[in-house]
Amino acid sequence: MPDCSVDCSIQIEEMSAGVYKITATDKTGRQFSKVGHDPDLLKCEAYRYFGAPEKEGLAFVKRLNSNKGAIVCEHVARHLVAIRKAVRSRPVAAEDSGWQFLCGEFEGEDPKNAAIWSIQEVINHEPSLGQWIESEFDVVIEKAMNSDAWHRKS
Figure (cartoon, rainbow, N blue to C red):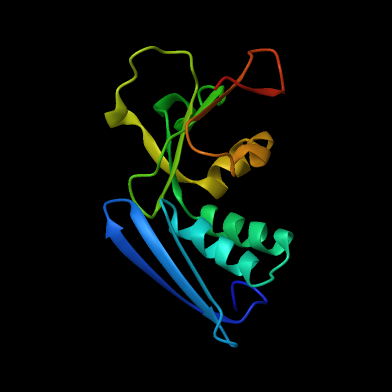
């Protein structure tokens, strides 16, 4: 199944650690080229450049990101407490979403006890996070103890 209704060839090259260059060419020979940190978002931008509808590009990114991994604190992973804090930083690998999902109840948690869940597993566990998954990097969101609403902290 194609990623998108736009017919183009795409090449992605890792220029240096975490820096990618995309070159895309459509059937008429038009080219799109850009450098960035997330190859999946670069691919989405290329599709949009060649005329893919915005919603189609976003659906493609969501499909890709649903399989990426996220760090989940041990208390959430063991279903002891709810997710109350989410932090997104720059991914360190292609399969990394950059997200960490935490209970926010314990200071100095041991990262050795954390679990890796797919983004889809996180959304299944806490559906209200779905609207935040495509957030930019360097974002922190929190949910108060007696609230269903997430609030951006940075």
